[in-house]
Amino acid sequence: MKNIAGKLVNVMAACGNVKKNGTNDFHHYKYATSADVLEKVNAALVKQNIASVVFPEVIASSDVINNKGNVEHLVTVKVTITLIDTASGEELQLSGIGSGQDGGDKAVMKAQTAAIKYAYLLTLAMSTNDDSEADSKTDESMSPNAVDKKEKTLPELLCTDCNVGITLGIKQVSVKRFGRPLCIKCQKKQQGAA
Image (cartoon, rainbow, N blue to C red; front, side, top):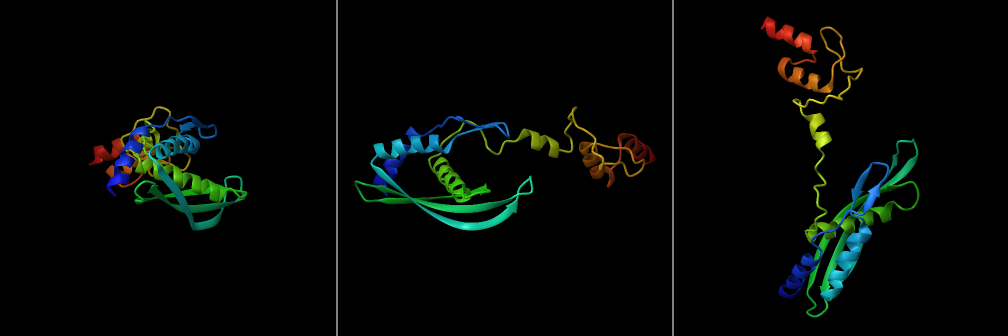
C-alpha cells in the first residue's frame, strides 16, 4: 500500500478545495456539483496514474408521496470505488452512500451521483469551504433561550392557564420551568405564587 498511499497524498493535495458552482433555486443554496468534484478528482487521479472503478449496489428502494401528492421513487445506493495504482498494482477501496428521489427513472442515477461525489469528498478531505451540518436557523429555533423578533405565534401553541397564543420559544422555556406551556404573564403569576 506504500505506493498508492504516496500517490493518494498527491491526489489529496491537488483536490484540497472545490468551489460551490451549483445553485439550488428552489431551496436557495449553493453547492459543489458532482461534475466539478469528478473533474478535479479525475484529473488528479490520471496525473498519478491511478485508475478508478465504481461498483454501485442498490441497498434500499421504496415509493414515497411528494409534497404535491405524486408518487416518486426513493432509492439508496452504496458505491464501492476501487482505486488501482497502474504502476504497482496496489488497490484501495472507498465507499459512499447516497439517496435519490425522482418521479421518473432518475432516482438510481441521482443516488449514485451523490454516493460517488461524497465518497471522494470525504476520502480526499476535499473542502467546499463550509460545514454542511451548520444550520444556524434550525439551531436557533430549537434553542429554548432563542429570541427571534420575527417569531410568530402558532395557533396550536396556547397557554394552558389563559388560552393566549404563545411562541415556540416561550412554550419551550415554560415547559422546562413549570412543566406546561404558559404565556409570560402566567409564568410571572406562577413565580409570584411560589
